Image 1 (tube, helix red, strand yellow):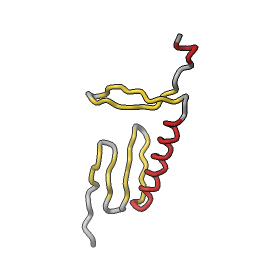
Image 2 (cartoon, one colour):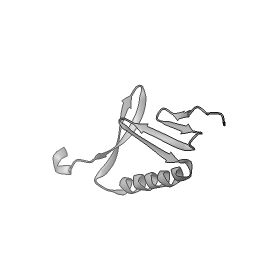
Image 3 (cartoon, one colour):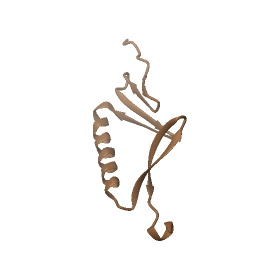
Length: 84
């Protein structure tokens, strides 16, 4: 019988499970497990989506501080009329 490997925490929100060869990401109430071979495809899709959202004129990036760390988030920019 092969020895069981404990999952390794990669970041605050992700783990690698060597027994199943999966990458697990848990954000808020959503947890997703990817086969190791599929993970880069997922990452590429997320990265491309981020890039396309960044090009949209009605979407901007805002910053906020949480737990002493500066974080970024996408946000809908207000209409010029709403600002004045």
